[in-house]
Amino acid sequence: MTFRSAVITFPGSNCDRDMADALEKISGTAPHRVWHGDNALPDGLDFIALPGGFSYGDYLRSGAMAARSHIMQAVIEAAGRGVPVLGVCNGFQVLTESGLLPGALMRNAGIRFVCRDVKLTVENNQSLFTSGYAAGQEIMIPVAHHDGNYFADAETLDRLEGEGRVAFRYAESVNGSARNIAGVLNAGGNVLGMMPHPERMIEPEQGGTDGRALFESAIRGLVGA
Amino acid sequence: MKVRVYVSLKNGVLDPQGRAIHHAIEGLGFSGVQDVRAGRLIELDVDDTVTDEALDAMAKQLLANMVIENYRIERVAA
Image (cartoon, rainbow over all chains, first blue to last red; front, side):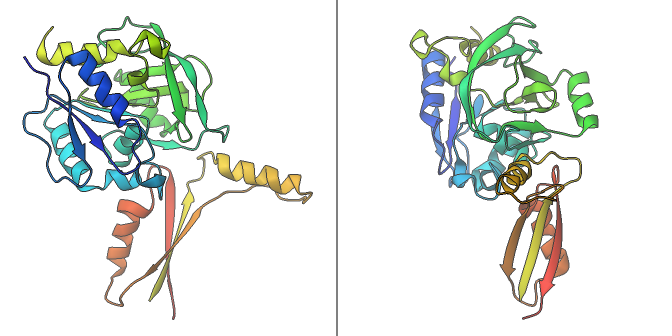
């Protein structure tokens, strides 16, 4: 069965090709490339990816303008129907700004842009996106962001932890994120937002392949092996 | 008519930018500054027919992120 995915490109996205490349290499089928001005998504999608970058120049707040674009209304609707949505880096910021995920991503606590490989712990390996990892597994994935400092009030954080919605946690200090949260799931488990870039760790030439299992998990879960 | 929307971080939300600005102020040799919080001022030029409710909705839906920010709207006499 063919894996029908889409990568949304906003003005200022810059990881959309990496994301498309990862999805094509791992699923065997090139994703649809969707432009922010499009009003509709292709029919029958199995998977939607919101890539990293600096959509709309990070004007107002990171992800704020993209979250209110036409195509995001279609993505919100699709997510509501249960279509899996992965947001990486700026994609994660778009997901929180659009209300698909709780919390907000603020300026890194250390002020500086952080661009390096970081260690993550897989906190929940029962989700569509993480079933290819072992619980508690430590993986190495790069981050490259200025606004990755995850914030939510204590009640929300407790709820996220209690419901197993913290997918990944930083195993080291990176950006000041509350409880070192690196990636969160929505209540339905079909939306994942994360600051680290799994699409940049899928081939040995990239310095590691720890990101591969995320895409493999999702593809296997959606269309079978 | 001019409208000013002041957006500021909620109490209790850490402000790394404010902290850096504070640090820089001290670096310039000024003393006595206890704390710095950075916000944003957005000026709108609107028709007189734009209601307070509409301005409030703009602030809530876009201008401020209600998870981390508060806002205050001020109509400015021409």
